[in-house]
Structures are given as structure tokens and as C-alpha cells.
Image 1 (cartoon, each protein chain N blue to C red):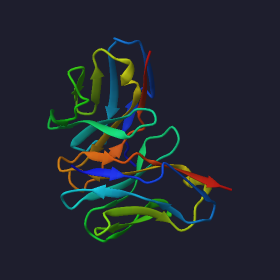
Image 2 (cartoon, helix red, strand yellow):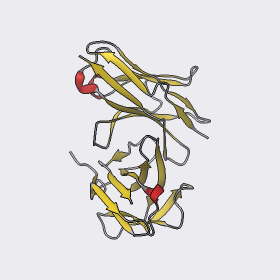
Image 3 (tube, one colour):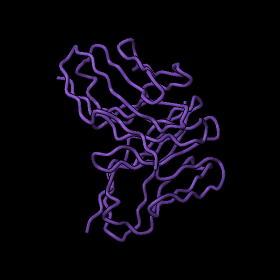
Image 4 (cartoon, each protein chain N blue to C red):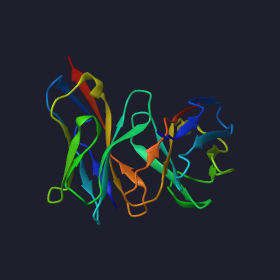
Length: 112
Length: 114
């Protein structure tokens, strides 16, 4: 069965610093992988997705993620954090019946 | 830009009461989903719906739960007799297809069972 592990329930960075949010997945088939962001009191918004094309995926708001099959990872990065990036980030894998399996989420705090 | 909408945004109910959570998926989408997020926990799948029938349901989705697409636009989740542990944020999602197609989420309904 597919599963997702997000290391670090909270990540704190300074404004302008690199953002790195970790995601490892388990899947018996080539996965479709997603990063969603949840701002306070809002729903889940798609940041980016991997669908077996390019391994480096660019998303909205300057985020990108790299699919590494050998490491079963799909880490999310952004070169320079902005205060508006403070939110909760969820990594998800689509399973064989097309439902999303979510990680436990990482709350990103951005310090001024 | 089209979006998934959900009503109400907050629902407070007494244990044992029935609640209906409503969703309007994106108009040309064919696949519909309900997920929930108990406070402090993961977002978890409840049910998927296609062609007017349930495609898959999780262990959580027991006989107390039902879904319906009563007309061409709405998609509802009914909980017949709410329990304290049903308190959660409920998200509706829709997608045009499956596989690599994105599931678009609504803003959620926060259900509080007293």
C-alpha cells in the first residue's frame, strides 16, 4: 500500500532563507505525487505535481520539487522564503484507486 | 477561475443529529471525493464517486455516511447520527479525470459535534 512520510512537523526559516520540506513515499507502482498548501482557515491548494514527465517539477509561488526514485523522495524547495509562505504543506501520493494518501503535514514558520 | 465551493463553512450539531454537508464541484468534472481532517491529524480519504455511484470508500465510511449527487451541480455528504468523533474539517474535491488529473479541493466545512 502506498504511504507518505513527511519529516518534521514544524520547520522554521528566516525570511529570504532556503525552504526545504521533506517527503518520502512508498509505492509499488510509478507514483503520481503532489504537494498541496493549506493557508489558515482555507482549503488545500495544489502547489505542484509529478506525473512521470520531468523529474524536476516547478510549481506556483516559486516552489519546486524533485522526484528521486532511488531515494523514494519528493522534497519541496524554495530558494528564498517569504512571509506569505507561512502555511501547512502536505505531500500526497495517488494510490492505485486514484485516492490521495496524505502525509501528516509540515507547518512552515517564516521569521522576519 | 472555477473553484469547488462548500456550505456551510461551520456546522455545530448535537450528538445523534443528522447533518448534510454540501459541495458544488467544478462544473465539467466527473469525479468527486470527500476527505476529512480531524484536528491535528492527517487528511484522510472517505469516499470517491463517479457516474452516480460510489467508486471506493474507506473503512471510516460506514453505514452512518452516505453521499448523493441530487442534481447536476451539488454533491452532498450525509452523516445520519453524528458522534463526537465525527468532529473534523470535511473537504470536498473534484477532478476532471483520474490518474494524473489534479483533485481540486474546496475550502472545507468545519463540523463540531457536541
